[in-house]
Every structure is written in C-alpha cells, then in structure tokens.
Image 1: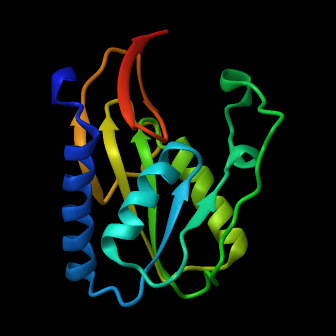
Image 2: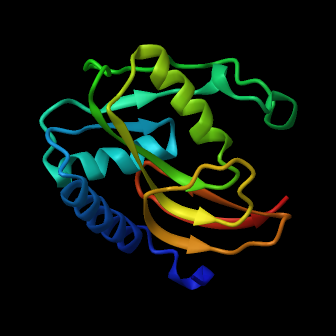
Image 3: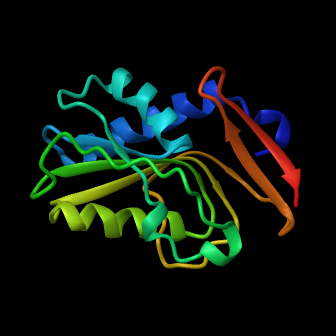
Length: 168
C-alpha cells in the first residue's frame, strides 16, 4: 500500500468486510466488540454500528499494561476501561488502529483476561505495518504498509479520521 492509498474510509470498508467474513467463517454468535483507546476506539465505534452488534461497545485503556513506559513515557491522565458486558466465554472482536510490534495487543489481551476468559478473540486492525516483535498477528486487516524503521503512522481524529506518516 502506498502513502496515497491511506484513505481511512476505504480501509474501514475493507476491515468491515474481513470481519464479516471471519465472523461467518468461525460461526460467531453474538460477538462483542472492544476498541483499544484511542484510535482503535474510533475505528470500533464505526464498525460496531455497521455490524449491528447487540451489546454496547467496550473501550479498553491499556496504559497500565504496557511494557514500554521508558520509550513512550507515562500518561498521567489515564481513563479507565469500560467493558459493559461479561467477558467470560464470549466471542470478542478486538479492534485497533495500527498493528506494529504487537505490544499493544499483548497488553490488551492481558487486561481482557483480567475481566474473564473469552471463548476467542478476533483481532481486527485498520493498518498492519512491518516491525512485529511478538508472535501475535491480526486476523482481519484493512490494509498493510511497509515503513522505514524511523517512520511512524498515526491516526488522528475522531472527526475527521485521517492517517499520516512522519519520521521520528
């Protein structure tokens, strides 16, 4: 995927299609959706409505579960996670904006398991980029992108949602 093809609407459409296919393939009944704060929550809000899920959207703030505070710094204003449904035995659609190293998803899974043991978790991401460090991989992807090590991709929003690439 090129920088010119970073249209968020198109990527959300592709992710929605992939999620519908995965839900059908796994025969998931009554899944719940959780968005990872902040970008994943913005994407999840749109997908939750499109998929017509019955349960309210869950929001996950993984700040206290991260293992890279020395790199990203502490965030003093941490909002709490809100999971307005039981997790135990449920089929969960976990949504994030950018999948990079896998550390965010690992932290999200740790927090989800603190609430209970889901039947299964389907991971959907708007963008998967190169640089995976942990053996976790998304199930559903809006698009893939190869960036140089010094480049980062960022979702801004919530209105409008936009992706940008910058160097660190």
